[in-house]
Amino acid sequence: MEKTKRFGVSMENKLLKKFDSFIKRKNYPNRSEAIRDLIRLALVDEEWKETDHDVIGVLVIVYDHDRRELTSSMLDREHKHTDKILTTLHIHLDHENCLEAKIIKGKMKEVQKIADELISLKGVKFGKLIPATFGKGI
Amino acid sequence: MEKTKRFGVSMENKLLKKFDSFIKRKNYPNRSEAIRDLIRLALVDEEWKETDHDVIGVLVIVYDHDRRELTSSMLDREHKHTDKILTTLHIHLDHENCLEAKIIKGKMKEVQKIADELISLKGVKFGKLIPATFGKGI
Amino acid sequence: MEKTKRFGVSMENKLLKKFDSFIKRKNYPNRSEAIRDLIRLALVDEEWKETDHDVIGVLVIVYDHDRRELTSSMLDREHKHTDKILTTLHIHLDHENCLEAKIIKGKMKEVQKIADELISLKGVKFGKLIPATFGKGI
Amino acid sequence: MEKTKRFGVSMENKLLKKFDSFIKRKNYPNRSEAIRDLIRLALVDEEWKETDHDVIGVLVIVYDHDRRELTSSMLDREHKHTDKILTTLHIHLDHENCLEAKIIKGKMKEVQKIADELISLKGVKFGKLIPATFGKGI
Image 1 (tube, chains in turn blue, brown, purple, cyan):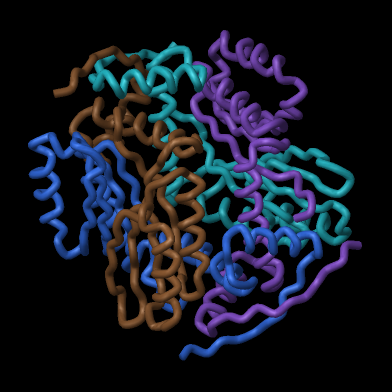
Image 2: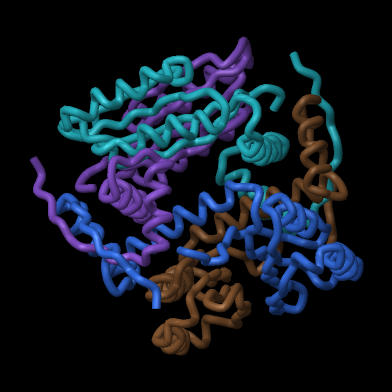
C-alpha cells in the first residue's frame, strides 16, 4: 500500500462552494480525489511536451471498410510498426463505417507519425490521437 | 460507389506551397484528401455541440487495478449502462496500471455522464473522453 | 476582505512530489494557489457549456490590412454589434499583417456568431475565440 | 497583389452538401475562403510545435485588482520582459475584477514562461495563452 500525505489547502468560501457543486456534478467521492484528478491531468499534459522518453496514446479512427484498397494499405502501414501499435479495438458502426481504437507506444514523434500515416489514408474519414499516460507515480 | 463532384479552389501561391509541404509531412496522397480531412474534423467538432441526437465517443482511462474495491465499483457503474458502453479494450501497462479504451454511444449528456462517473472513481488516475463520429455522410 | 476556509487534502507521496515540481516549474507561490487555479480552469470550461447567461471571450484575429475592402467589411460587421464588442487592441505585425484582440460579451451563441462573422471574412487569415470569465465568485 | 493558383478538389456529394451548409452557418463567402481558413488553422497549430523560431501569442488573464500586492508583482514580472510583452489591453469587469489581453512575442518556451509567471500570481483567477501567428506567407 502506498504512503499518503495530508496537507491543508485554503480557499475563498465562494470558490469552495462552486468547487463542491462541481464535485457533485462530476460524482467525485470527496475533494481530495477531485483535486488529485485535476493535478494528474495537468501532469499528463506536460508529459506529452517532453519528446525524449516514451509516451502512450490512443488513436481513434473512423473509416469506410468498403474501400477495398484501404484495408490492405492500413495493414501495410501498421506492419511497419508492429512493435509500437500494441493492440486494436474494432467495431462496425453500420454497413460501411468502422471505428477503431489503437493503443500506440513510442517516442512522441514516432507515435505522432504513425497516427499521421493512418489518418491520411484515403477512406479514413476521421482520426484523432489522444495523449494518455503510463500512470507511473501519478 | 458514391458519386463525387469536382470544384475549383483558388489559393495564394505562398499558402499553396506551405499546404503542399504540410501534405507531404502528413503523408496525404493528394490535396483533395487533405482538404476533405480538414473539413470532416470541423464537422465532427460541430456534431458534438448538438445535444439532441446520438453521438459516439471513446473514453480512455488509466487505473490502478490493485485497488480491490475499484474493479467492482467500475463494473457496478458500467452495468447500469450496458446499452451505452458498446465494448472495452484493456491492456496491462505494468504490474499495477491498466489502460482501457471504452466505446460509448448515446445522447451527448449521457455519454459525458458515464465518462464522469468512471473518471471520478478513486483509483482512476487519468481519464479523457474523445468525441468521435458515426461517419455518416462525411 | 473575503473569508477563506481551510481543509485537508490527502495525496500519495509520489504524486505530491510530482505536483511540487510542477508548482516550481509553473512558479506558483504555494500548493493552495496552484490547486485554486486548476479548479478555476475546470469551472470556466463548464461556464461556456451553459448557453443561457452571458459569457465573455477574447477573439484573436490576424489579417492583411492591405485588402482595401476588408477593413470596411469588418467595420460594417462590427457596427452591428457595438453593444457586444467591448473593445479592440490592434498591433502591426509587419507592413501587411495586423493582429487584433477583441473582447466580446453576450450570450454564448451570439459571441460565437460574431466571431464566425469576422473570421470568415476574406483577408482574415487566422481567428480564434478564447473563452474567458467574468471572474465572479471564483 | 499576390499571385493565386487554382486547382481542382474532388469530394463525395454528401460531404460537399454538409460542407456547403457549414459554409453558410459560418458565413464564408465561398468554398475557397473556408478551405484556406481550415488550412491556415492547421498550419498555425504546427507553427507552435517548432521551438526554435519566434512565435506570437495572446495571454488572457482575469484578476482581482483589489489585492494591493498583486498589481506591483505583476508590473515587476512584466518589466523583466519589456521586450517580449508588446502591449496590453485592459478592461474593468466589475468593481473587483479586471480582464487583460497581452500580446507576447519570443521563443516558444520564453512566451510560455512569461505566461506561467503571470498566471501563477496569487489574485490571478484565470489565465490562458492563445497561440497566434505572424501571418507570414499564409
